[in-house]
Length: 294
Ligand code: MN9
Image (cartoon, rainbow, N blue to C red; front, side, top):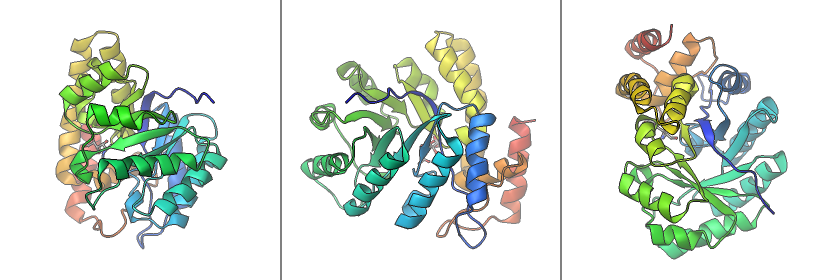
């Protein structure tokens, strides 16, 4: 069966927690609405690093997948990140989100243990066998320690359900080699601060944490670069990267959430082991928001 072609600007959806670390359903709904109505994204990547997914129980993951789908309906494309070191959980979630109507699965490369490539390949084949859905490989070597070569991607793509990659790496040689070798696969840029060069090299879209706040500029960069207007794309990338530098220096997910609170979205808190917000951090996050957005 042919799956829906993915692409465009996707926010990696944040998760809103209350101060005790419980998932805040209403906050998650507001985050979805803000991304669709204000940031005008083409899609949402649910259950990724940005969603603090690796800190959640299976039931919490399911609840978030369900809330996001219920709120977004069919207004934007939806990718569910189901990867986990517990492969039985991944299989269960793959079935669950496919039944919910998600347009694609994604799974982080299995991390922590030094898995062989054959083990990694078997992981993807096991997850994709569980559901009639496509799979976007979540490639993020700086957090997982897992690298994949062009030849190894070719081997993964023997499984036709694997239709794309979320490429969160600064290796533009590999990105270019990938684009040339697999023109029909869906390639998403994963580092928001490198979106312009990734777009020039021909990615089909981008998935990012900072788009929850800065989605409008992200689209400007993507569209300008695709149409060859590199000057405009670079101007917007410069402002974007001033914003991203400020956010990273103040704590990535917390600062994005406080910015969203300034925008009237109940983005809540982060979950432990992520720390609470200090007064200083809150003050700085608000300053950052007002520096780049009204
Ligand atoms: O989804 C995100 N990666 C992580 C991709 O959060 C680990 C990126 O959007 C980065 O957060 C962003 C800032 O470095 O590019």
